Image: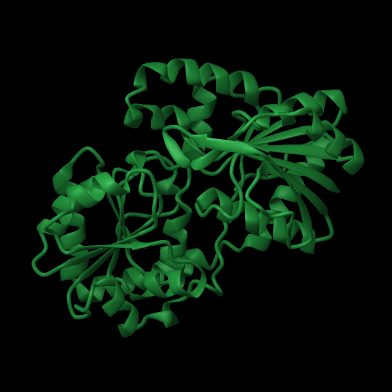
Length: 377
């Protein structure tokens, strides 16, 4: 197959969507498909054998890390030369609208996937009154696709409730070779805890943005004697968070990737994740693969990954005491914590990127030869 993949974000940016897409592109190429990535220009022209066509853009005012790239006629010329069998649009918003347009112009099937819970993000930027309008725009865009892929059953149910049709779940994936419990390191514990490796170590990995609700970790940290917190990542909310966490034993680590990131996961005592806006929460799977027990909000796609009391703990995101109680229980029960570590690793081992990509290929085949839907994860 020749697949034109439109995305609003790609390498070298670092986030869960880019992680998923980069693994997917690599696996599709390895499995014999040919991929053209159309994304905001990040300076790359190739990745794992796939061509990248970067469209010039400008920083998004509310989120400078993201580039806003507008559709332009040159995209059509590139697609005409590539001759795609299908177009896959990831989070159709701005650049992705070109994918919707050219699927009609070139009469090729359209697949869309939903990864960012944009309507719920709005309230964190003072734009909650626009949520209804956002859902209507998403419905118009997504309902042009032959299949709309979601990353969890919770998102499938929510999109269905808002009138988006032809939904299926695209299963999660994680690199269980990179993320592994055996990477636990006293040196990394010392780095993350700023020289206090024997203290309880809480970890957060992800964007430092308002919708991640990282401020909710502060009461948890304050409730734990001698505990330290490491925040791995960066984003538009960092300065506000640095002020909010001032005077607490919190280390703003910045970005970590590859083996360093995997070692950080494996070396922490608990991964605390308060976000209510996750369509999946890929970092949760990475933490679990590394044997890091998870304490996460019971919201969005998270319950698809974390089973409360089995491979992690879930808490009511509207109950501040719930997060505190769950984290205290995790740190105080060593035997139970070790069981959670083992169960978390076993859960992660079920989800390889190869399996997730083969399922995606099945969805592609459906739109190319439509007669039945493959089984959703």
